[in-house]
Amino acid sequence: MLDDRDSLLRRLHEMRSEHRDLDTVIARLSDSLTDKLQVQRLKKRKLKLKDEIAWLESRLLPDISA
Image (cartoon, rainbow, N blue to C red; front, top):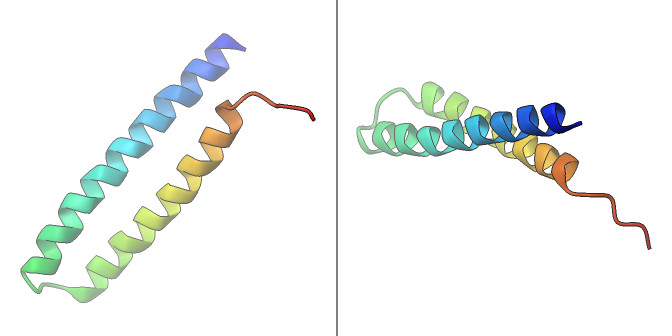
């Protein structure tokens, strides 16, 4: 269980880092008025990462029964 939790935490850290990196890349590309299709794809990837991060975070939270 601990190894699984550690691997989930590692993956979560990697995904958050990629999400932040995409922010930077999107901002730079948007400022320079380059390929709009590429910016659109990066934004889509960023949204997918956000969903995956939320899913991982929910897996890491302990189950609380009412």
